[in-house]
Length: 164
Image 1: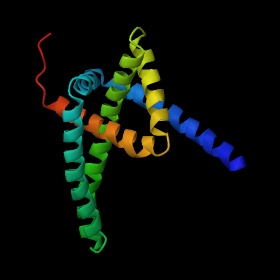
Image 2: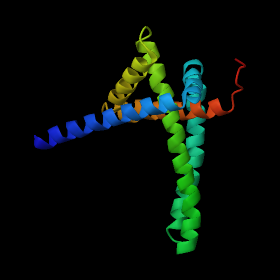
Image 3: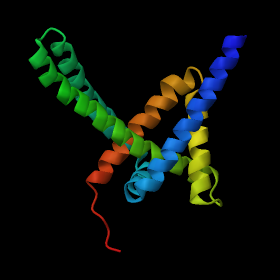
Image 4: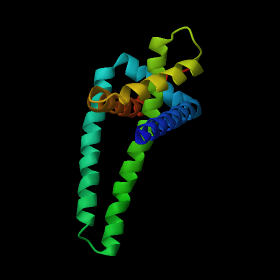
């Protein structure tokens, strides 16, 4: 029973940390997150497919580089692991931006009359709790939101900015 309390406590701390992280990302990169939010609202299917294709492509490249580096010498191992690490870190950064947009999108749909901060706060809390749901959250919601967010942020880099 003691392990159950510890697990719940750690899970709540992680959810609070993720919520704070996504709020900071959303308030730091406002324009990029707004573009991702718009892409997720207007074209969720395209965002998901683009995220899936890019994740598979770059994931396979990273995996191959890591597997090849295991049997290589020290110098070659470093040469092979640096691009793999760079790909993984870039994916993580882009995923953070996309998830910040996703939380704002969720908050906008669920709490349309609240402030942007409250929308992002509740959107990230709801997303954390939804993705923590066994089976459906782990294997359906989490991959979908991650891949759609990843695709939405990639699309945002290739969109033309409208003049203000």
